[in-house]
Image (cartoon, rainbow, N blue to C red; front, side, top):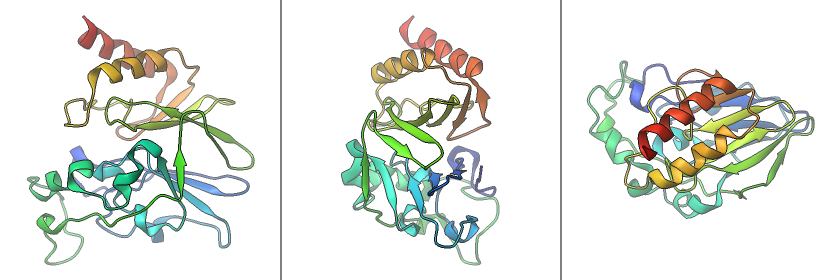
Amino acid sequence: MLTEPFVTDYCRANMWLVRGRDFDMLVDTGMGICPLAPEIGTTPGKPLLAVATHVHLDHVGSLHEFAWRAGPRIEAPFFETMPDQATYANMFRNFPGAVSELPWPGWHSADYAIAPAPLHRLLDEGEQIDLGDRSFTVLHLPGHSPGSIGLFDERDGTLFSGDAVHGGLLVDDMPDSDRTAYCATMRRLIGLPVRVAHGGHAHSMDGARMREIAVEYLRRNEG
């Protein structure tokens, strides 16, 4: 797990590097305030697939740094230009205390921008990402955003859940959020044999805690 320690808690996301036999996978790429690629311990000559779980700013900031990129088909057009209405980059430009330490002298959050990062692989529900020695099934988990995805290793029960579920505040009031869809996602998660969930924020959790969070969300939103 990698993170950006000086970014405000609200925008500080988790990034997950998964080692595979044939290629490695990086799940999400943070805010991109400083270059991320030099911080990834890649093996020379071994491919790295950077996967975005959705197009929000705290998950795609450094996506353009990677030569092989994947993300949800539903949101794919936004990756071409990274518009504010999809990424919410404009929110960070006016965020009080955006960073606790400047990345370089003269840096201002008002100048924050996300470079376009067109996707090379468009991910749909049920598709497999096979690293050679382990495989992840793409799950469409909408609600937080229309195209949000998770990556599930059905063999060992590991789920990379993006912002669909995590141990922090679940955000469902963005302009592109859908609470009805989020409830359907939570019902789906309750039925999955997840052993451990690595979310886009907060700490990893076991499957029991993930299901508790899903049940709590349904209780709040379905009465």
